[in-house]
Image 1 (cartoon, rainbow over the protein chains, first blue to last red):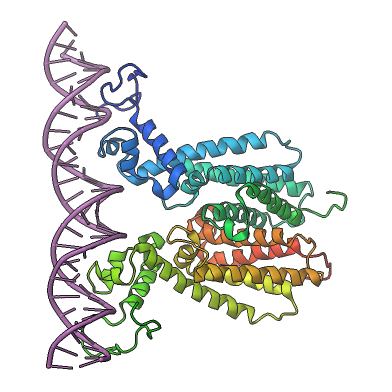
Image 2 (spheres, protein in one colour):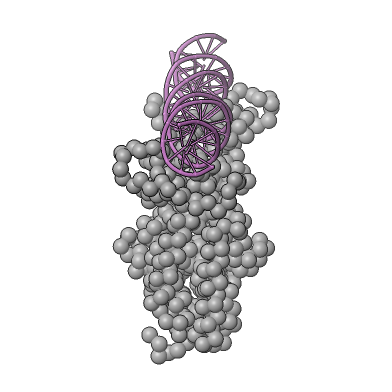
Length: 225
Length: 225
DNA sequence: TGATGATGTAATCACTGGTTACATTGCGCG
DNA sequence: CGCGCAATGTAACCAGTGATTACATCATCA
């Protein structure tokens, strides 16, 4: 490495002058977008480096400069998808007050499933653990750990307020995660037809099972609906 | 088809005489076993027709006679795995009396997760819906429908006996399935390390979340443990 | 015993990911 | 100001995979 801390991509501004200017412009970005689109169209398994290169109008070897392997591309794609996922979750949480942690927990589950149902292939890439390496140093891993920690605190708050019937919060947390992850996965893996769940019903069913779970862990307040 | 209803494999008995006798013996069976082993070793994705052929000591084109495609091989593998899965479930249910349907529901979940945790790759092949075609005419599909129907009846019995607090049985059933499927999937997809669940803990955790769920759907009988 | 059909072999094709040698382009330094 | 150099894309190649065909071999049965 000759000079460290280069600005990484300083000039290169040439958005739409020549039709096929010099090299490409921002191949990295375009490849990620193409991969996301490929996943959207044919599932996560349908993503191939060559096809992404083809769509970017570039030779099969070109992506190698930016992504030394398919895994590297998928890791970048997962990072992008994860950011969008987090954004949706954050937006949903912003609408529920801190004063009702159980409601926040519920909103978290709903937002999780809503995004997963609308972006099944992207969700699969993030969570399948077969499309890229999972080492703890990744942004994605840290991101995930943050969500886990947040959920833990939310449940602790709920318990402190007497909203939960059981104090085994870890158990509640894992069960909740398994529930939503399982539902999202059933969708991805095509289980819903055998269960008689139509496309448009899925969102309602998601809400129904989350509410069932919440009712199951909530402390008994007969007055609550 | 010249003569229908042939015994399918009548003579051919030559288990261990010559070292490399004539053709092979029962290549179809051997290929399925090799594929199961490959899945065990490297996950479902690691199964390849060529490698299975290699392990069977046979040329790459040989499997084509028995399985015209990788999907066909995987379908056969899934059928074999599904049989073993069903056997485990049946054995577990045989130990719980008909008189306590909720306990049977619980035992079903426990057996489901026990097999899934011990045979993750085989479970993945069965349930992932990306390793073979899922048409309704398959034995596997009928098999699955049977399990769903059985669960439904069990829950109906439990409700009739006053063991459940909610009458929306479909919702309970789907939530239960999502819970166990999600847990099994988290294991397959390598989520447990981030959740601080060690290998040997997984079985206990599985039982814990199933019990949490059961407690959540059970009618309130303060005396029950 | 010899014909026939089932089964495995060899060879080939298309496609994928990965890798290297080379060409081109534009930036930055002398 | 212009030239070298590094970044970036191209072309060509390799290995591995699934699929498919022509051909060889072997077991059975008429």
